[in-house]
View 1 (cartoon, rainbow, N blue to C red):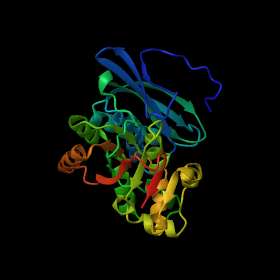
View 2 (view 1 turned 120 degrees about the vertical axis):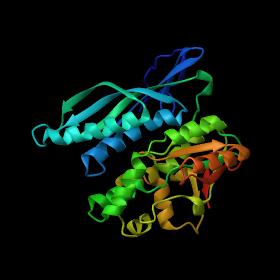
View 3 (view 1 turned 90 degrees about the horizontal axis):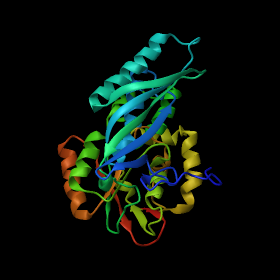
Length: 320
């Protein structure tokens, strides 16, 4: 999509649109850089307040993936003013504001348009020391990969739209998606890690593939260690799969080697597009052990070692 575009160079740009990072980072001075990101989408849960919470947690996640601290945010709102009561919009904004308050982020403005379909999200600005920015491709041979949230949000969202998901599951899903990646990010920065990304629309495999960019390394994944919502297995068997899952699989499957014994539903969730998913963190074996212990102590109970960085095969992901 960017082919032929003449991007604007700048010596202070640490990372920008030229590569698949989670957010842009620009150095203001030797000890300060800003992180900028934007994200918005249509509702994936019915409750407008919950939708606002999830959308904000999702937008802030890119800053947390870089190891930064989000400071300010601006609302992005698309709303059908003639088809839907303004009370719905108010609930969305209230949910979002409450999540921003939890994160310690200041809402300073925004923009809204009349649109046939409701959409909500944020542009976010954060800060970080220029030398502490965590890239998604800083992986090293022998690194362990830690995933901090369960997979399967896209499949469950599809089940919700089909009326197949029960209220307790919807509540559990919403709680996970609305959980900030703040604790996981702050904890990884205290330990020191080599790479990090957050798992969102491209799915686990898609974002893992981005970690391999320009490294000449590979990844092995232990399919039995992947955290996921148990209900996904049944939904997968019923064919309740989002269209994004198929697109992710078609695009990234050439980089993947799938062992014959990997269950089909596990294969599905590895390509499942996530909303406000967890962080995928690469750290040396010793640091990963310490990080996992601290994450569990701080309430990130789903955090699990799911794979390892290897020197061969290069530029491939092997799922065993």
